[in-house]
Length: 155
Image (cartoon, rainbow, N blue to C red):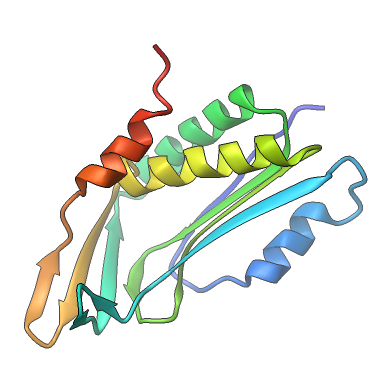
């Protein structure tokens, strides 16, 4: 059976449990489900954050995430895959991103989820601006995120 990733780029929130239930409903071939949900923090390095503003390039974001989802599907034996990424103003405590991978066995599900999150963190076409009492500032890429993503590069 060919697996197609479900990808949503949306402004509205999502329900993690509902997404897992939708992905696994009626399935007996799935033995492992791994989820990663990214949530907006209320502070960064001790400084309060009022909100994050996430911007994206419509069309390009879906295509790029789809390309990496296809790579994950070709590298690991996944039975199902869902990726949801929000855009717009996101307050502390709100969901930002969800990756759900499902496989017959846990290792493939874990590795595929890590691969996808490392990609989303470093290369997905989203731009993040933090809002605080001091004003707004763009969030720069971090070296440790790039190092994590580099481990997936095929030689």
